[in-house]
Image (cartoon, rainbow, N blue to C red; front, side, top):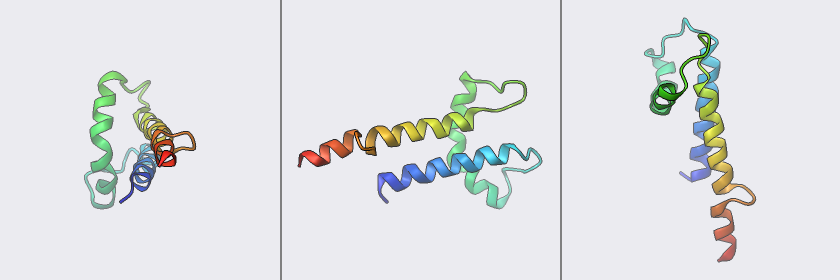
Length: 89
């Protein structure tokens, strides 16, 4: 699996996680939601230590989307590190 696809998939999972925050009655321990929770929870757990929910609103999934979008752009974007290294060859 290429890095671009992996980072895109992670961004998509965090977007789904944002949508799931709109439905607090959804249990992330049940089957289809567990597929979203397992890969996203480690980063969200760390972020929640530094950024607690604000007024009951958990913004850490939004930060997750931003982080992985930034990483994807820095590595694979038009001026990304890996893109520029590939053009040197």
